[in-house]
Length: 198
Image 1 (cartoon, one colour):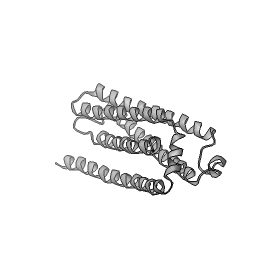
Image 2 (cartoon, rainbow, N blue to C red):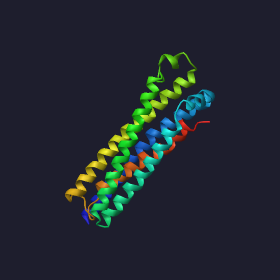
Image 3 (cartoon, rainbow, N blue to C red):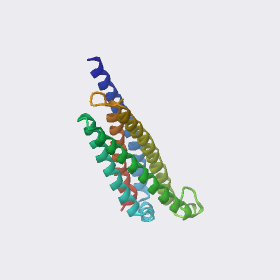
Image 4 (spheres, rainbow, N blue to C red):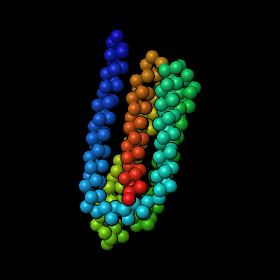
């Protein structure tokens, strides 16, 4: 009974933490909306500078990773250790590919002189400077969350392999999965705001 309560408590704690994360990104999305209303045309022009292909590929990668992590949690519950390890490893690999894509995307933008308060943006429309400021802050913060999520998935992977996570005790893996799903969900909002802005 106490073990069950402990597992429930960990899950409740994770949900409360995820709620604070939703508030954080929700606030940034509201800020985006406020500036979009004021500088709509500049935001649309700024969006044209972003490569939709990068955004689409990263969206697909995160959707695959979410499916893999969910499958891994199910596999743990069904005592399918090999499948669980494969699912968590796939989630990790997808996270890494996402970050590599983001690195190349950011590098290309910076090399093109598109970054907050760069000469190109400062001399251009105010709205575009704000757009890219929000772009770097929000996608950068999301990237940090991807790294944290990968760390949690890696720990879960090691614990599954060493037998510390089992079909009876899997709250760490389940909470790591919840965090990863939230990170993926946040990207589903980021993608249209920046890459499909019209």
